[in-house]
Image 1 (cartoon, rainbow, N blue to C red):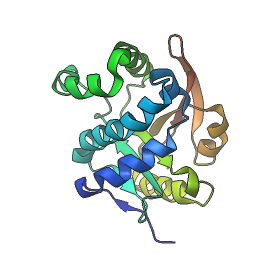
Image 2 (spheres, one colour):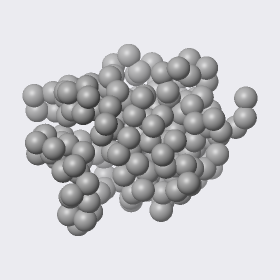
Image 3 (cartoon, rainbow, N blue to C red):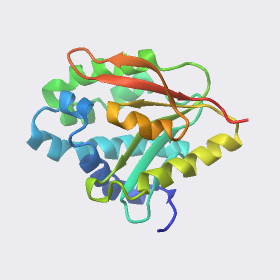
Image 4 (cartoon, one colour):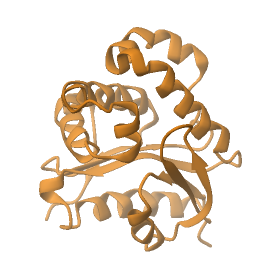
Length: 196
């Protein structure tokens, strides 16, 4: 199995399609896009936007066959400033439609709970359902955590599924709290202390 590599803008459509399949039944996505037809049509656009916003920070990784992808934000760059919401407002409205306010409320709850000390932030990681359980996500995680450990930095993520907590714990993350989305699911905040 080939190693993971850095994603580029040329990978946009393939990465977005992989993540759209990976998150199709995610609790947060189901809350924000309850209609299956809308999710199928709009999720690739959402992940294409996420990739566009994350690429400048050099933390986007993908497996060679697009089985899995991950977006990391470096220390001090996890926050999406208000001006980016304005710049991408039309795209967000197209993606979420009448649920755009619910999406913004969920984003606000997640940001309010975000830890402030400098850290690497795993914004998104997902594996195509057809490739799950074959180690692709783990390879992406190890690739980035090796760099995080070289810098002796902490890392942070939110797990939208309790079932995934043991997977993240196997990489050294520990649950530090819960994030309740109004009218929706609970996320689990997870922190990984720096390695000596």
